[in-house]
Image 1 (cartoon, one colour):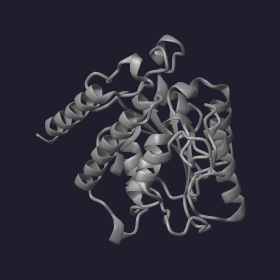
Image 2: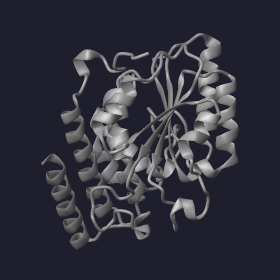
Image 3: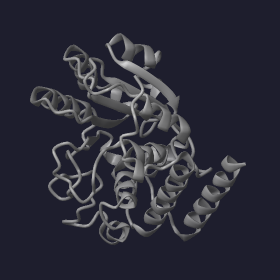
Image 4: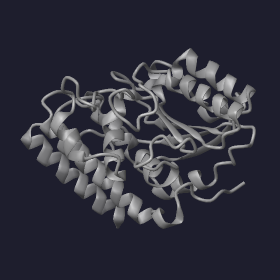
Amino acid sequence: MVRESLVPVGERRDVAQLEDLAFELRQKLLHLCGTYEGAVHIGGDLSSADIFTALFEYGLTVDPTDLTNPSRDRFVLSKGHAAVAMYIAMAIRGFFSYDGIVDTYGQLDSAYGMHPCKVQLPGVEASTGSLGHGLPLAVGMALSARGRGESHRVVTLMGDGETGEGSVWESALAASSNKLGNLVAFIDRNRQLMTSFDEERVTLEPYPEKWAAFGWNVIHIDGHDMGALVGAIDSLPATDTDKPTVVICETVKGKGVDFMERNLAWHAGSLGAADLERAMASLSASRVKESV
């Protein structure tokens, strides 16, 4: 069943606009990484930038001015170390100011911590960071919504590395057993862990087939193809159906910056002035190349 975009028609972005916003997110991400004195989880932020943009600018029904509306979609960032990319996507969407992120990120009592905190930052639905916990939380939210007769969607974004956790597969089984068609899991399949490539530590392949065997509807796409992301969102089944959906997004860790792409050294790091200039130049060059 093909459904209409979750974003009202008057606010709907086309693919070209979404691509521009994803590029803006990456620019702002690099800028923050170049101004913050500590390390930023830049590699996984860059790999998930297109997914965040597609969700916050196209896929999620949420009004930044009405964050307690019971009909809003719920979003859970399971890979909590990608919080910076989420913060910037939310700032671009109008939840709060990007300058506020830059000015206070990582400071004591800041709303913008290295992992998201729902107590500190309105608009964050769950405090996350311990990998493997986001899907269980999302399953609980989706089950609660189903029990209350609510029709909103619960969406979570996971890293592929964390899907080696037993809690993920217990939750995957619980979701299908409870027929949670209102649940969607996006997976940033960048195939890297903090210090190694994931298939070297935990064999996940055949990956789509594993999710299908657990009773999930599986969508497998290029996570940097905005048209494919929009298509996946548009093709999500209605929330009253009985199968949860997983969208496996094939991505590149460090996407857009040549010296970071698939480089284990850039799971996290900081950028000095010279590296920032180099990274910005590489990002602009990759944008030009993709647009040709």
